[in-house]
Image 1 (tube, helix red, strand yellow):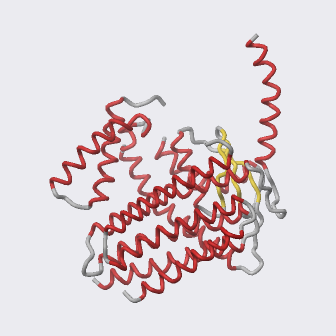
Image 2 (cartoon, one colour):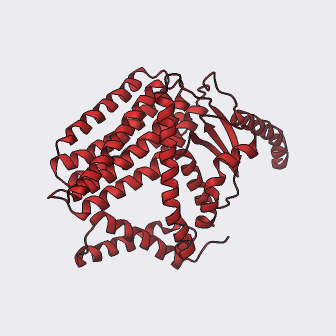
Image 3 (cartoon, rainbow over the protein chains, first blue to last red):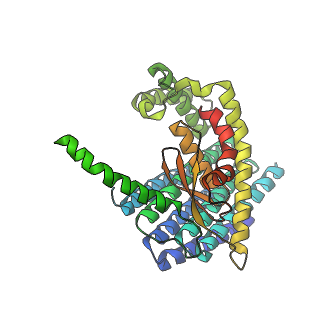
Length: 84
Length: 133
Length: 168
């Protein structure tokens, strides 16, 4: 169970890298793609946290988070296309 | 029991590697379309690896139960079904909002298609008005 | 292909919802099963009209067998796609050659087209950009052949032989 710390750090680095693209991205689409990737990675992070704290209930949090993030990204994409 | 934990840990390691790769692709690629190409695929496979890995890993621990595996598989399948859809929505939104392709791109059939379609609609429009009169 | 009867579509929705419930709870306690069944019946009554058009015909053994055979094939294609992506990302010169190509499909069913589009998105270097009738517009990271036939042979045909049977 010690190795899990290493994975959490790796995921944190990946999140920071995509954060760079969110701040830097020249266009709105770049930022949105980065946010999409970040939400996917965060869902994985939540699943790992469930294992870290040994609480199964966190898996439900990850599922609901994935559903809400999907809805949010779709809504933003429709908005960018010019019609909600 | 420990074999399960080892398999799960290996899957989680592969998954985090692909997460890392997707973030790297996000930084290294030249335009938004290629960023989408590299990052969406890797992030999807990464979450598949992490989630199934956590499910199997939990089976090998003393607090684990079968519910861990089935629940994480539900999350993984959900992400597998929805990630391509959001990628598709985003790439179409990017194209429609007028972001140009990278200068090294070789072919753009979609623009030809849209232009042909626009021309067709312009030709059809007067006929429709005629019908209304 | 016409729509299946209402009863068949309703029953198919109930079965799928109940399977999801089983996976989420992962328990065989009679109370949980009964409550899940009641919830599936209620939710299916509200949603079956938009959930499916084929009904129980989707559970034909041949289709289920092809669907199960499709899973490892698809996973393998996906892993290959990711190794390809890894090569392109980690290579210092970024060997990419992107473009948008057009493909044709033989699938008629709407759900089948959706599944094909999703499969294309997750496999080697391709993202579906738009679908218009039977034309697919695909962003390809490494264009090998920009004619319609050549692109179709490279991208859509490997999946079609499975999806044709699964979604009819």
